[in-house]
Image (tube, rainbow, N blue to C red; front, side, top):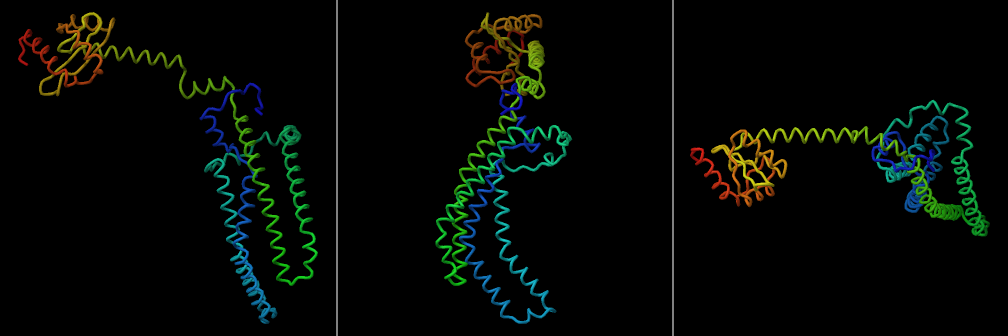
Length: 351
């Protein structure tokens, strides 16, 4: 459970990333154990015949060669033995190493951090150490481990009891048969523990995931502070947006004074156009607005002697189809050209 009752909010992505960087992840130690038992059974199932034949060859070679009994050549026996056993054991160790790595990566992805190894001074405090020793979490871990030990012991007891009569008959078998029988019983035990470990690992991982989510929960104040830190104070952001709109409005109104014509509704819409022959592919919208902004555009146009032309359909079409800085669409070329022709005619400018 969450250590602080006030931590009721789910962790944010940034909180999760920070916990991950510190080595805090949802991890079950039973999953690698379960995976190792399963892989051990599969490896032994396929590898034992190969290893058995090689060991037989090794022992026959050693005991059939009397030179190894000479003290001066005993070192060569040791070297030969190490090479042979290394050749047989290396694939097994490599498989277990890969299983351990893959089973952990499957739980929380690839993670490399040294922060988890950093010494923490609070762990040296004997009082806090005693509190951790007798905490509910420690007692739960103790209970869980004792329960697993009891279950494993019970399974071993019943399996060995079931096989007891066969074990007693081992003395009547040859050495090879005894070895084969012991390997078979060992495989049965490994398979039993592997099958038992699967539900234990699944339950433990679910619990670890739940415990991890509870431990990284945040208070409402922490969520607010993080949002302010990374996204900015909402009031400041609102003020910035308001200031940006004001500056954008000032720039737009400044462009009205340079426009060639303002086309209006006449009351609700106003769109200012500018056209430079040879430089622009079509007239460009430099300002637009409705209601109060439209009235302001017309005021600035009058102050700067920019012609105002009333054409409600064209004004509405320009306002809806164009953004500031856009060239007018082709379907409005003819209508706008007629307006500009009239404006330039009144100014005495040749289009």
